[in-house]
Length: 212
Image 1 (cartoon, helix red, strand yellow):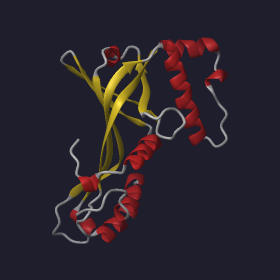
Image 2 (tube, rainbow, N blue to C red):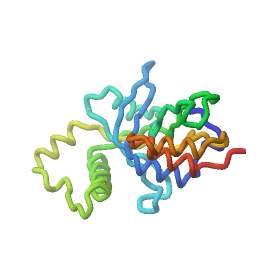
Image 3 (cartoon, rainbow, N blue to C red):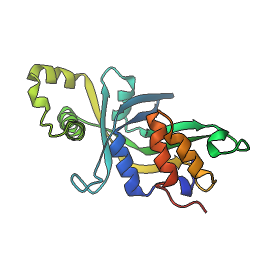
Image 4 (cartoon, rainbow, N blue to C red):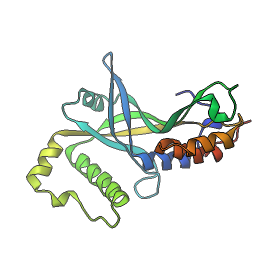
Protein backbone atom coordinates (compact mmCIF):
# COMPACT_ATOMS: atom_id res chain seq x y z
CA UNK A 1 0.00 0.00 0.00
CA UNK A 2 1.35 3.40 -0.96
CA UNK A 3 1.63 5.83 1.92
CA UNK A 4 3.69 8.76 3.16
CA UNK A 5 5.08 9.57 6.59
CA UNK A 6 2.44 12.17 7.35
CA UNK A 7 -0.34 9.67 6.47
CA UNK A 8 1.08 7.01 8.80
CA UNK A 9 -0.04 6.16 12.33
CA UNK A 10 2.20 5.42 15.32
CA UNK A 11 2.36 1.66 15.85
CA UNK A 12 0.25 1.72 19.03
CA UNK A 13 -2.48 3.61 17.13
CA UNK A 14 -2.30 0.98 14.37
CA UNK A 15 -2.87 -1.76 16.95
CA UNK A 16 -5.83 0.12 18.44
CA UNK A 17 -7.40 0.71 15.02
CA UNK A 18 -7.14 -2.95 13.97
CA UNK A 19 -8.53 -4.22 17.26
CA UNK A 20 -11.39 -1.71 17.16
CA UNK A 21 -12.38 -2.77 13.62
CA UNK A 22 -11.63 -6.50 13.99
CA UNK A 23 -12.59 -7.18 10.36
CA UNK A 24 -10.65 -7.09 7.10
CA UNK A 25 -9.85 -8.77 3.78
CA UNK A 26 -7.16 -11.45 3.66
CA UNK A 27 -5.29 -11.75 0.35
CA UNK A 28 -2.72 -14.38 -0.58
CA UNK A 29 -1.10 -15.94 -3.64
CA UNK A 30 -0.68 -19.66 -4.25
CA UNK A 31 0.13 -21.68 -7.38
CA UNK A 32 -0.53 -18.82 -9.76
CA UNK A 33 -3.82 -17.70 -8.22
CA UNK A 34 -4.67 -14.73 -6.00
CA UNK A 35 -7.17 -15.58 -3.24
CA UNK A 36 -9.09 -13.10 -1.11
CA UNK A 37 -11.58 -13.48 1.72
CA UNK A 38 -13.31 -11.05 4.11
CA UNK A 39 -13.02 -12.31 7.69
CA UNK A 40 -12.80 -11.43 11.39
CA UNK A 41 -9.31 -10.24 12.37
CA UNK A 42 -8.03 -10.94 15.88
CA UNK A 43 -4.77 -9.07 16.42
CA UNK A 44 -3.11 -10.39 19.55
CA UNK A 45 0.13 -9.83 21.42
CA UNK A 46 -0.26 -6.04 21.42
CA UNK A 47 -1.68 -5.59 24.92
CA UNK A 48 0.72 -7.69 26.99
CA UNK A 49 -1.82 -10.43 27.70
CA UNK A 50 -0.80 -13.12 25.21
CA UNK A 51 2.74 -12.77 23.88
CA UNK A 52 5.36 -10.16 23.21
CA UNK A 53 5.25 -10.87 19.45
CA UNK A 54 2.09 -9.70 17.66
CA UNK A 55 0.19 -12.14 15.45
CA UNK A 56 -3.24 -12.38 13.86
CA UNK A 57 -5.55 -15.32 14.56
CA UNK A 58 -8.36 -16.07 12.14
CA UNK A 59 -10.32 -18.70 10.25
CA UNK A 60 -12.19 -19.32 7.01
CA UNK A 61 -14.73 -21.88 5.84
CA UNK A 62 -13.16 -25.27 5.09
CA UNK A 63 -14.73 -25.10 1.62
CA UNK A 64 -12.82 -21.86 0.91
CA UNK A 65 -10.01 -22.62 -1.56
CA UNK A 66 -7.88 -20.01 0.20
CA UNK A 67 -7.39 -22.45 3.12
CA UNK A 68 -4.83 -24.39 1.06
CA UNK A 69 -2.43 -21.47 1.50
CA UNK A 70 -2.30 -21.94 5.27
CA UNK A 71 -0.41 -25.22 5.17
CA UNK A 72 1.89 -23.90 2.45
CA UNK A 73 3.10 -21.04 4.64
CA UNK A 74 2.24 -18.55 1.91
CA UNK A 75 2.80 -14.81 2.30
CA UNK A 76 -0.40 -12.86 2.90
CA UNK A 77 -1.77 -9.40 3.57
CA UNK A 78 -4.84 -8.37 5.55
CA UNK A 79 -6.37 -4.98 4.74
CA UNK A 80 -8.45 -3.32 7.45
CA UNK A 81 -10.51 -0.35 6.29
CA UNK A 82 -11.96 2.51 8.30
CA UNK A 83 -14.28 5.35 7.27
CA UNK A 84 -13.98 6.84 3.78
CA UNK A 85 -15.78 9.34 1.60
CA UNK A 86 -15.62 11.29 -1.65
CA UNK A 87 -15.04 15.00 -1.02
CA UNK A 88 -16.45 17.51 -3.56
CA UNK A 89 -14.69 20.84 -4.05
CA UNK A 90 -17.50 22.79 -2.34
CA UNK A 91 -16.77 21.11 1.01
CA UNK A 92 -13.47 22.98 1.18
CA UNK A 93 -15.37 26.26 1.08
CA UNK A 94 -14.29 27.02 -2.48
CA UNK A 95 -14.97 25.82 -6.02
CA UNK A 96 -11.29 26.05 -7.04
CA UNK A 97 -10.16 22.80 -5.40
CA UNK A 98 -9.79 19.37 -6.97
CA UNK A 99 -12.20 16.84 -5.42
CA UNK A 100 -10.54 14.07 -3.46
CA UNK A 101 -11.21 10.96 -1.38
CA UNK A 102 -10.56 10.63 2.34
CA UNK A 103 -9.90 7.19 3.74
CA UNK A 104 -8.34 5.24 6.60
CA UNK A 105 -6.59 1.91 6.02
CA UNK A 106 -4.08 -0.45 7.61
CA UNK A 107 -2.30 -3.35 5.92
CA UNK A 108 -0.90 -6.27 7.90
CA UNK A 109 1.54 -8.44 5.98
CA UNK A 110 3.11 -11.69 7.13
CA UNK A 111 3.37 -15.45 6.73
CA UNK A 112 0.41 -17.81 7.02
CA UNK A 113 0.56 -20.72 9.46
CA UNK A 114 -2.04 -23.51 9.65
CA UNK A 115 -3.73 -24.07 13.02
CA UNK A 116 -4.82 -27.50 14.23
CA UNK A 117 -8.33 -28.16 15.57
CA UNK A 118 -7.49 -27.45 19.21
CA UNK A 119 -5.82 -24.13 18.48
CA UNK A 120 -8.59 -23.12 16.09
CA UNK A 121 -11.19 -23.72 18.79
CA UNK A 122 -9.16 -21.79 21.36
CA UNK A 123 -8.70 -18.86 18.97
CA UNK A 124 -12.42 -18.76 18.14
CA UNK A 125 -13.24 -18.71 21.87
CA UNK A 126 -10.81 -15.85 22.52
CA UNK A 127 -12.25 -13.82 19.63
CA UNK A 128 -15.86 -14.39 20.68
CA UNK A 129 -15.11 -13.54 24.29
CA UNK A 130 -13.47 -10.22 23.35
CA UNK A 131 -16.19 -9.19 20.90
CA UNK A 132 -19.03 -10.26 23.20
CA UNK A 133 -17.68 -8.18 26.08
CA UNK A 134 -17.14 -5.20 23.78
CA UNK A 135 -20.56 -5.42 22.11
CA UNK A 136 -22.86 -6.50 24.95
CA UNK A 137 -22.24 -4.84 28.29
CA UNK A 138 -21.76 -7.42 31.02
CA UNK A 139 -22.03 -10.35 28.57
CA UNK A 140 -21.03 -13.75 29.90
CA UNK A 141 -22.10 -15.70 26.80
CA UNK A 142 -19.72 -18.38 25.53
CA UNK A 143 -19.62 -21.33 23.13
CA UNK A 144 -20.40 -23.55 26.11
CA UNK A 145 -24.04 -22.48 25.89
CA UNK A 146 -24.43 -24.17 22.50
CA UNK A 147 -25.08 -27.95 22.40
CA UNK A 148 -21.71 -29.66 21.95
CA UNK A 149 -22.68 -31.43 18.72
CA UNK A 150 -23.55 -28.09 17.11
CA UNK A 151 -20.28 -26.49 18.23
CA UNK A 152 -18.28 -29.47 16.98
CA UNK A 153 -20.09 -29.33 13.65
CA UNK A 154 -19.30 -25.64 13.26
CA UNK A 155 -15.64 -26.11 14.12
CA UNK A 156 -15.29 -29.02 11.69
CA UNK A 157 -16.40 -26.70 8.90
CA UNK A 158 -13.71 -24.04 9.44
CA UNK A 159 -9.92 -23.94 9.07
CA UNK A 160 -7.88 -21.76 11.41
CA UNK A 161 -4.68 -19.88 10.75
CA UNK A 162 -2.25 -17.49 12.33
CA UNK A 163 -0.43 -14.74 10.48
CA UNK A 164 3.14 -14.41 11.79
CA UNK A 165 6.16 -12.12 11.23
CA UNK A 166 3.92 -9.09 10.92
CA UNK A 167 4.67 -5.86 9.08
CA UNK A 168 2.25 -2.94 9.37
CA UNK A 169 1.54 -0.14 6.87
CA UNK A 170 -1.01 2.59 7.52
CA UNK A 171 -2.52 5.32 5.41
CA UNK A 172 -4.95 7.82 6.96
CA UNK A 173 -5.44 10.28 4.11
CA UNK A 174 -7.23 13.18 5.78
CA UNK A 175 -6.27 16.27 3.75
CA UNK A 176 -3.27 16.85 6.03
CA UNK A 177 -1.45 20.11 5.37
CA UNK A 178 -3.74 21.30 2.56
CA UNK A 179 -5.97 23.79 4.34
CA UNK A 180 -9.74 24.19 4.43
CA UNK A 181 -10.01 21.81 7.39
CA UNK A 182 -12.65 23.77 9.32
CA UNK A 183 -14.95 24.00 6.31
CA UNK A 184 -14.32 20.35 5.44
CA UNK A 185 -15.04 19.17 8.98
CA UNK A 186 -18.29 21.16 9.13
CA UNK A 187 -19.48 19.70 5.81
CA UNK A 188 -18.65 16.16 6.91
CA UNK A 189 -20.33 16.62 10.28
CA UNK A 190 -23.52 17.95 8.64
CA UNK A 191 -23.93 14.67 6.76
CA UNK A 192 -26.23 11.93 8.05
CA UNK A 193 -23.63 9.32 7.00
CA UNK A 194 -21.85 7.86 10.04
CA UNK A 195 -18.51 7.45 8.24
CA UNK A 196 -18.46 11.14 7.31
CA UNK A 197 -19.28 12.17 10.87
CA UNK A 198 -16.37 10.04 12.08
CA UNK A 199 -14.08 11.66 9.52
CA UNK A 200 -15.24 15.14 10.63
CA UNK A 201 -13.40 14.62 13.91
CA UNK A 202 -10.36 13.01 12.32
CA UNK A 203 -9.64 15.79 9.82
CA UNK A 204 -9.41 18.33 12.64
CA UNK A 205 -7.08 16.13 14.73
CA UNK A 206 -5.35 13.62 12.43
CA UNK A 207 -3.80 10.77 14.49
CA UNK A 208 -0.81 10.83 12.13
CA UNK A 209 2.58 12.52 12.00
CA UNK A 210 2.46 16.25 11.15
CA UNK A 211 2.75 17.11 7.46
CA UNK A 212 6.04 18.79 6.58
